Length: 66
Image (cartoon, rainbow, N blue to C red; front, side):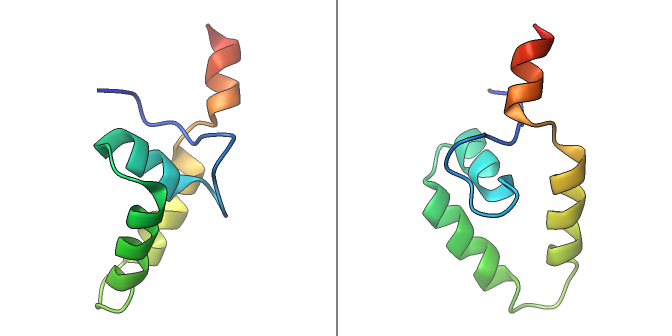
């Protein structure tokens, strides 16, 4: 499994959905549709997205660390 990092290419807002799609082997569009559909349900989805946006390292920063 790959480490969760926000990609520099292919992201729309923060890169969280693109990162999760890469991790689970789906397309970024599918992950975005799942996220938008989950926002229709009650729960902390938006807060989780914001938390992941700030907690996941950017892919360009992790490349330079090696």
